Length: 359
Ligand code: HEM
Image (cartoon, rainbow, N blue to C red; front, side, top):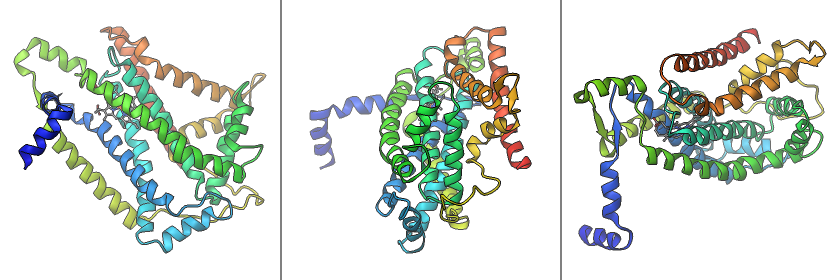
């Protein structure tokens, strides 16, 4: 029966070619191989988001009159609703963390260099989309913190020169954060961003398949000197089984977090109430938020916030185009790029911590 089914599929779809491909795929094995898990971990968390998100969609209602109450209903009355919502929220945060960690790991392993420029570029676009998921999802429960954080976030977007106002009105669906904003954010969160993410993910994974896993320059050099040290692991089943164990562990952590720290719902938003003190964005926007807070109102004749926004825009653009600046030259060229990466990581971590300590 098994052999017959195998032949049936093989006759039509060339199963043997697929098995051949799967058996030939290998992963370089060296002291830094564990960093290769982070991309797969981000992918796993993305799948968790899709599954739990679809389940939430069965009960969530995107309007100012119903959104908060529908989430309350999910938490209190839907069987395992509290678990699904908490996993969705915790997994979203974990996914942002693993996407950043994956980005910095491929940066320090120099995996963005030729021929992987487009793998890096599609990855950067995915990171922006992940942040977009976070920003749009934050508003959906329509609670006080999310309402005012969205007001502040879209206000900041409005400061961008020339197109800022247009971006703000486009995001809000009008001049203010209202029900129109909620409808829009819901559309971004459950249709636009998932569509874009799926297309980009496909491209990203296909590019990873095309070029295979990179080997860090230092390891490559050592292997060139001593070819007998070269080690590779079969992707299937050896690497995949290890990856599955990591996913299993992630699932256990998510389950524990959701059970012991169910995601808070807060107080329903009142658009007419004054903004409460100490409104903060999600932790992954904190480094930018804190920077903008520290910049003086005026730098010479120029608006200080504008300088900050332009600075982040240019830094993001530079980071995105990094593979085109660092082609893989040895020595000096390599060291300044590493320095930039160390600075960027230090800045993000430092400013985030400062944001929480300073309040
Ligand atoms: C939703 C977000 C993302 C997902 C699901 C994802 C998924 C993956 C997977 C499964 C791999 C192969 C395993 C590995 O190297 O870890 C990979 C490799 C890679 N990713 Fe991502 N990724 C994401 C975001 C990013 C970001 C933000 C960047 C950097 C800007 C990036 C750049 C790369 C590069 C350059 C590789 C090739 C690594 C190598 O050959 O050694 N990815 N990604």
